[in-house]
Length: 334
Image (cartoon, one colour):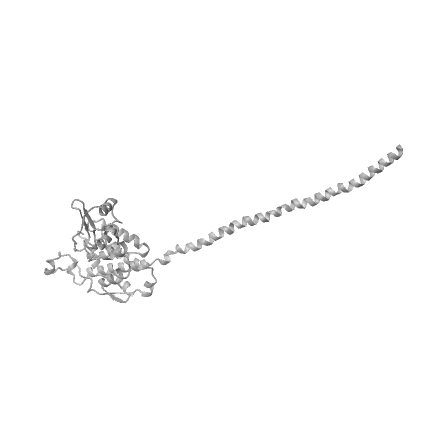
């Protein structure tokens, strides 16, 4: 029995060995299979790469947007260089206070004539291609340059005895028909100063501040700038012009003791005051004044001190107009 048991035991051990060998061999096979799984795990990286690529895709639209906003930068294309033609004359013969050296300008009449020829010969198609602001600037410059030419053509002013009863010797009122008789050509069309004023400033462009940009060649006039008006900075220039004029004794004077507000007569309803109603008219303030006067007072509050604004808005006062000085705005003592 013991021999048989020993034989049986040996047989069992042999069977266990034979059966155990495949299980041992299977492990290397599994490990080989597991190896590619571990190596293939970076296949997850392609899914990560699109995520990285997706961020440029998100930023690309922003890059595409930059060229869209850039057309605003090439504003120089809209910049009209015509106004520069007036720069030399204004800089050379007009000082910071708006006083003109008519004597020197008269000696350079050819320079002024050549400039006016540029206005006469401008192609209307070129003018029509300009933005509104450049068109406004053009007519302000045309008006001011033509007025300079009229004064120079009559300088020194010859006063008449009859007119001296009403006007001082150097007054431009001694030049008859200054606004409605003197004719000139702009873009091959005949104009007078009065026609430019009516056609473009009263009826064409709704920008009442232009009336403070026009020179009337007189001491009480808004000062003539020693630079041209430009479309690309027109509103800035008009604001600056209005501020300078209204802060000067010729534009506004508030007598608090007498409770009287004195305003330039060019802002009278009968002169240019009515032109301010459409843009500056109000029913909320200055209720004891007529609509054109309310509009002018409302306009003025944009350019004066807070104390003066407060006075105009809540105090009781009467409105009167300053006396206009028609003497020529000429430089003296040179």
